[in-house]
Length: 64
Image (cartoon, rainbow, N blue to C red; front, side):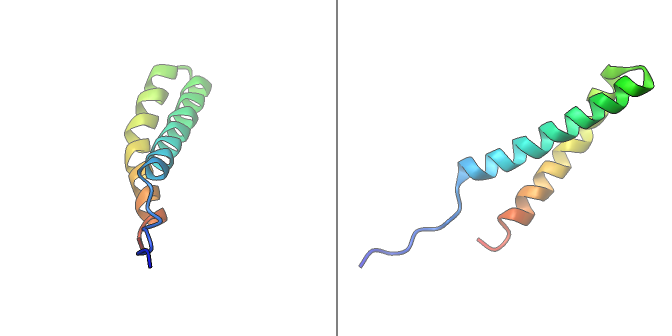
């Protein structure tokens, strides 16, 4: 009998992390563009996106 493998996937966790971080960067860039400075929006989105991506990954893979 084979032991049951974990459903944790590093590729999946990385995809969640990168996806949420990229989404926050895109939203930040759009807000920055609307306010007249895309660079600041991009930077703010990146700074906010990293903890959001980490939190989303932890929530997704919490019970594994």
